[in-house]
Image 1 (cartoon, rainbow, N blue to C red):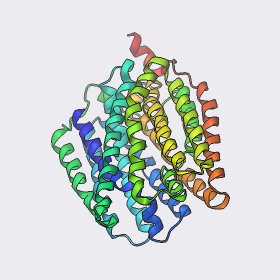
Image 2: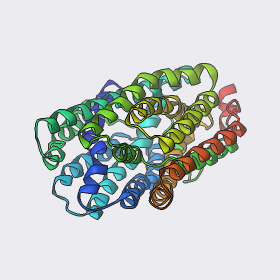
Image 3: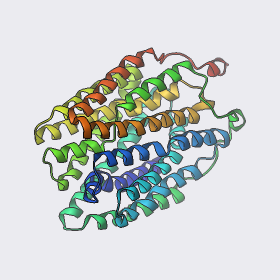
Image 4: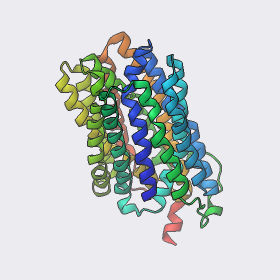
Length: 386
């Protein structure tokens, strides 16, 4: 798990050398917020079906390394190609490939983490892994800021992402053993589909509603630029966001272990709603800095808690597929979310766009309490009492 943590740190370092600069780069090649919405929405939705399939294959065959390695290799091969693009649809293709890789690796990796973690600290374990990722996401923009401040052109910076990308693939290939989980392999041969858990399905509905109002974070950077924050400061905003995420992720996961998954998730969604209202109404640069810092606590409260809740609600035989369905649900809802946000932003302005996201977060928070966290998954009841 230490090796996987190093891999995640390096991968997020490379990715976040680029991510905070994409809005300005898209604008520099003649595109606007609607194009950015399509790019980010398609990128987020691209790997959705693969997340479900990779979860099925992880349950079916138990061999996780191949999927995980491919999922990390694809984006790290494509990302440096941004240095050569000329039009926005080429950015779309590269981001599509990036999210495709995420679709391959997300479910097997999360299932592996759950399999070696007791339920009592599962939220904290997911939170710790998130902390390591966010550290990489903070280091990446810091390096980006230093590189740009030294006068290196933006396209050259994109090319430099090849260095941590190569390290990601090497560390994973050498440091992780690709052994299948053979102990329960025969128990895991089931058809593709949603796990037979009604609380889990209700959870997916709430997550889908929230995600429809959760547009790409690139729009937060777009809003920052609109209020006068220069592009050279975008990496610093990204650092602030991910430092707060890193600081709150393990704590947020642990809170879900102590106070319950629903408590942590609803708290995070309420923070999200308030922050999105703030972004819509902001008029000064200092407000953007404060909102970015507060926004990071939303991720710390929800991301680990939601994964832990998914695992809690299904039998172990469905674990990777349930995580795949969860990731896929978010991915499928992300496409209309970012496209809708981009259109609303262009047609009605930021207050309407951000206000819509805030309202959907409140609706999702009202839906989530219907999810019975304490129910025992039907298929697991017999095995636990045996």
